[in-house]
Image (cartoon, rainbow, N blue to C red; front, side, top):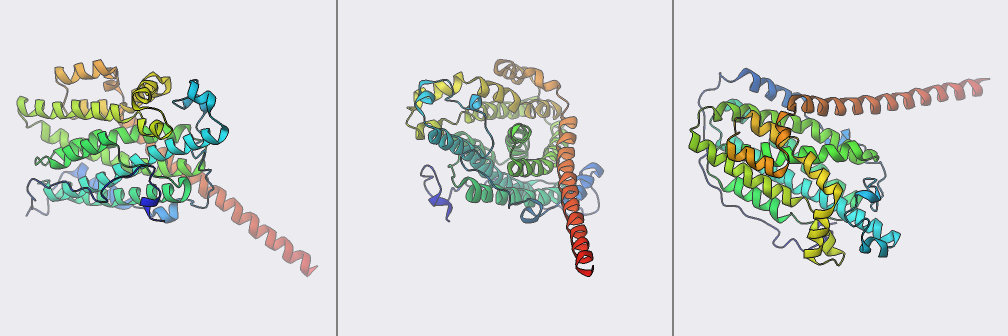
Length: 370
């Protein structure tokens, strides 16, 4: 079924065109590179996987409860709107919120694919071009997987959120080669990782857990790549140049924070926008969600050298400053371990099934022979 037939709201023109700016850069040095970045490139090649085969798409998903979301986590829970809803209404609300979340993941992954391709084009160093080429393939796979999950399992799609689209546009329009790194690898990918992780760790549904765990295994490499490249480059910038990038980070963080409310969903259930915004802001679950969502961005921004007073104050005002002390390497290692453990558990279960089938066949053969 065409995606346009599944959209909850009209997404408008089927193509969004962002004018390209900046130079395409070639490098004639083919035999030198940073060892740690070339090692990450090798890992990116080694860790390629097929989303059609690694994920068990035969797992059933209830479109009216795709994530096992508890009632207390729903924005409308405890309001007069919730009291008037039937069980069917509540199921549709769960479907719409899950669709909205995964639709933003899908649109973000397409944006990440385009940004990674832009990095291949514009970054001056060949080692970074090599790695970005593997990331472009990763992001294509992620977009493919999220699109399939939305089409086949949730059967509903939401247009890209205005704030996410704004940050993507700002990232792609900037002619400076480091801005796709900063906008995508640090801000959008960092936020996505935290959102993926929260759902991965709370859902009791096996298919979305698989999808998120495997995507996060790739994303851990992507954020590591952004940190390596930007940390090296930002050591060379002037204070004025660093302040420009810090302003971009502040604006991007505000856009991402405001993106998280899901007001579009509530509007589709007949709630006026102003009231929908107020209900979202009062949601205790949303407040906790926002705090956790910056757990990947703040330590990464600090690590790459963007930690001026204005940026620090912005994080104080947002209530996330203390997250600058989070151990990002540990979080990334855990993301990889969770995916590997999930694989091991699945393969062990499949092996037990195969052994049981063989033993049953042997048993039947003996009984026939007897």
